[in-house]
Image 1 (cartoon, rainbow, N blue to C red):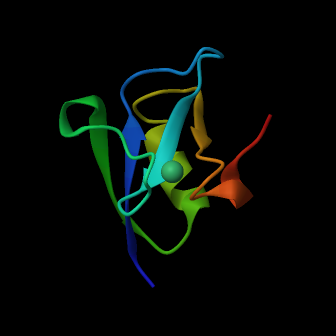
Image 2: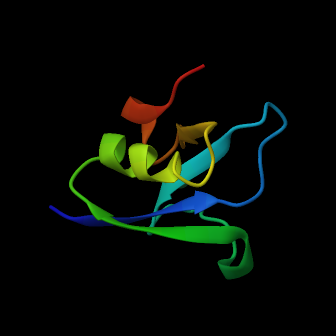
Length: 69
Ligand SMILES: [Zn+2]
């Protein structure tokens, strides 16, 4: 199943830019998110996010399998 992903333009305190699914309750507001595209898994979404922010990381709420650290 294809899911739309976004990356947070604002870094967390540790410098991570979190990658979210479009239906995540932690999804940033429109002005604070960068559209990544539709992917079948969060690994591809994080890979795309790293083109914008080298320190991208999966959200632990919606993309736990891609969350590290
Ligand atoms: Zn999320």
